[in-house]
Length: 184
Image (cartoon, helix red, strand yellow):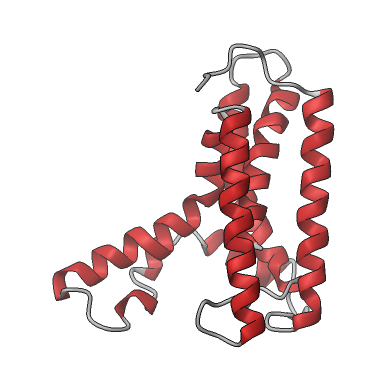
């Protein structure tokens, strides 16, 4: 769920920036900021989802992984075709994972020639952006049961993505982006 949810949140946050800023030109920067913060909030809420898709796990886990990967890529394609400015929100919303799970790991693994298993380690944890997520989990959701790996909670992921789609649809109608879009 996380790729499509983060992508959709990034799109919604661009509209939310416009809503909050009203007609002020800082709306895009507010939207990017909101999209950045949305990652930590969505990841914290992921305790109520299956969130265990893996390309090498059980058949169910593999299905969930590939399903969300295809939906995520399709959502990015749709968003960028609709309005390229959504790309700023999408990039901000995905920045935590890009930084923590890719950039920091590549820096940690490259000097040793990417030994087997290196990319699974949490490299430079003190530099992780996910600290905000962990703060939310440790304060707001202390003692709340996590449902990672509980297959029935895949339905929660589907509902959550559906709600984000509905939110975007409403925002596009009520807070449209200015027509000065960057076209493809």
